[in-house]
Structures are given as structure tokens and as C-alpha cells.
Amino acid sequence: MKSFKVKLILVFSIVLLVFFIGMSIYTPYMNIEETVEGVIANHTLEAAKSIATSIDLETYERFLNAPTRDEDYWAMRSYLNDAREKLGALYVYTLKIDNPTLSTTLIVGFPKNNEDLNDFPIGEYCTVPEEQVEKAYYKGTSFVTGVIEDERYGNYLTVGTPILNEEGEIISYLGIDISTDTLNDIKGTALQDNIYLLAFSGILIIIAIVCVVLLQNWYQKEVAQEVDSTESTYQKEIKTLIASVSSLRHDYINHIQVIHGLLNIGETEQASKYVSSLFKDVQVVESIKLSLDHPGLAILLQTKKLASQNHQIDMDITVDSNPFDKIKTIDLINILSNIIDNAIEATIELPEEERKIAVCCKADESYYTFYIKNTGQKILDNDDIFKQGYSTKTVEPERIRGQGLFIVNETVKKYNGAITLDTISEKETIAIVKIPIK
Image (cartoon, rainbow, N blue to C red; front, top):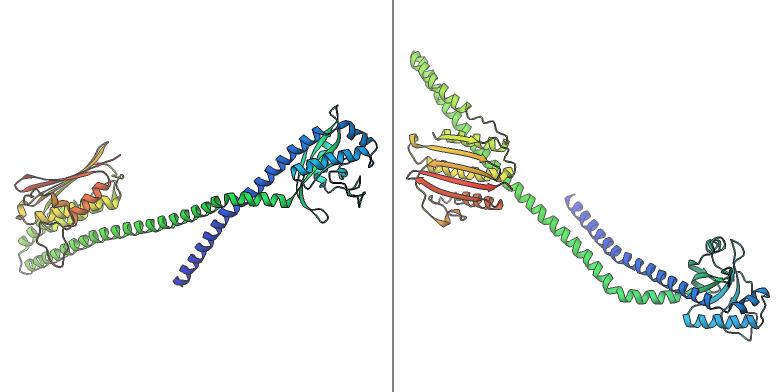
């Protein structure tokens, strides 16, 4: 089932990739087509306006008064044919628009055909769509059609503009047909000129998708590492807590056995004194509870204090009333846990009466500052102390050492902070961590 899901995701990703690449090429292609059609239509319309204003109005108006194939007709037809040849248009002609639905041709610019003197008859219905005819009839404005499919004359695009007399009145319309072959040739040239741009757009889409995939994989790996690190840290602290509780349980079983034995032999006074001393120990355990704004920090310090008590270490804890929320919980625990563990290891080498650790967490407007002071052997000045694998302890084959201070240093550097380790007396050491809040 899992394999099927992976394959499905893979196929879906490939389909999306192909789709986006296709769209990245198709969209510019359509834009080029529309742009080419628009440019040609506008250019042709300007040409139509120029031809309309250059018409010999006297000759044309005489023709309009008596629309027959006379000298005026052939003179105008020759003029329109010259314009057609210069433009490379399919047809150049004049139109009569006297109703909102249909238009008729008057004079079509084309060479005279002696074999068929009745070619392009006057008054033949024109294929200009009703929408453009209506616009011309009611508004008297220029028009541009879409591509018209005509079985007789082929496929073409038509533009039209009014022909005005000396008084500025519309007396007719001038139309120009541009063959789709001409449009396609120009589109092909434009597409050929832009083929590299289209290919580049496709490549950019591929690069963008690859980058997204790589970033997603990187993010997933980072999240997995964070989860592993968090789980490892909390597992370590939970094991410490369980070990401390087990130790306490073992100790109190022994204490109960002693009390039971004293009572059996009738030493009630000794049993009472023994219970009183145990009560003091219970009060010490109760004092471990810390009321802090940071739950993770509270649990960590409670665990470490309980562990210290099991090793007969006097641990003093001072924490400012601050949530310490500018540091990730996992990072804060990594820093304090490793330093306190090192302090406990160093302290238990001393006699019980000399075992002391002080933990202080302070916060002001600019810095979080953490002090961990402990009794123990003097630390030698050594630049390698924060390097991975370095340890002053005897290396045991089954235990990896030299990771704690390295982890602390790397975590502190992530927040642009600093850590220092100093020996303040022959048997007292202090670790100071400062992390800027902003």
C-alpha cells in the first residue's frame, strides 16, 4: 500500500510538472498570437483610415449617385487595387451600410478580368458580421472583426473605417481583408523569434519546481533532525528522572525495613527519631517543586535537583520570573542539561559535605544569562574543551564522552551567544552562558 502511494505521488508530481511546463509555453504562445493579431489589426485599420481620407471624393460621390461600372467605377477600382497590392491585403473595397444587420460591397479593388467583366458585382452581400455592421450603422465608428471563415474567399480578418465627405458626413465605409495565411506567416516569424524565450520560460518553471522539491526535502530532513534531537534529549531526562525515583524508592524500602526492625525489638524511641530524620528528607524532596513560567525549564530543574539529592549534592536554584521564550525549549534544555550534568559529575568526586551546585537563570532587557557554579576539581585552561569528543574523564569503551560542552557551544552560537568556563577557586568552577534576546 505504501509503495502504491509513493508511485501515485510520483505520477501526480510528473503530471503537475508537465502541466506547468505546458502552461508556461502555451500561455506566452497564446499571448504572442493575440498580440500579433492585435498589432496587424491596428496597423491595417490605420492604413484603412489613410486610404479613406485619400480617396478622390468627387469621383467616388459621382459613382455613389449612379453606381454602375462606368469610368468613375474603374478609376476607383484601380485606386483600391493599388492600395491592396501595397498593403499585401487580400481585398480592399468600399461598403454600403444602410441597415443594422447587413452590408453590401460597392467597389472591390482588384485587377480587371476581361474574361469576366461582371466579377465582384456591385451590391453583393458582404460577410462582415452583424455585430460590426450594427456598430458601424448606429455609432459610425471603425470596426475590427475576428477571423471570418468563408468558403468562397477563404479565412480572413476584416477592418472597416468610415469614408467622410467634405462636410464630415459618412457616405460609405472602406474595408480591408487580411488573409489568415498572412497572419500565420507573421505569427510564425514572431514565434520563431521568441522560441528561445518560450524555452527559457519552460526551463525556469522546471528549475522552480526542482527548487521547491529540494527545499521541501531539506525542510523535512531538518524537521526530522529536530524531532530526533528533541526525543533524544527528553529520553535522556526521563531516564534520569526514572533512575532518581528508583533510587529514592530503593532508599525508602531500606528505611522502612529499619523502622520495622526497630519496632519489632521494641526500640520505639529510636524508631521515632529515625522517622523524624526521614521527615526532613521528605521535606527536601517536596521543596524540589518549582513554580516557573517555563514548563520545560521547571521539569528540567526538578529532575536535576532530584538527581543531585540522590548524590547527596546540595543544589540551590534561582530563576527570574521570565518565560525565557526567545529560546526554543529543546535548545534551552540542551544548554542547561549538559552543563548541570557536567557539574554533577565533577561534584560527586568530592566528599559529601563539599558537594554544592548553584543554578541561576536571569533575564534583563538585553540578555538571558545562565550561571552554573559547582564545587570540584580545577579546570585547566584548554581551547579544546568545547571541541567534539574532548573529555577530561577516562574514556570508557561503552560510553561516548566529550559531547556535552560541544553541543552547548554549538547551540549557544546559534543564538549569537557566548559561553565561558572559569575556575574561581581551587575547588570551585562557574559556567556562564549569555544569549542576546534580540
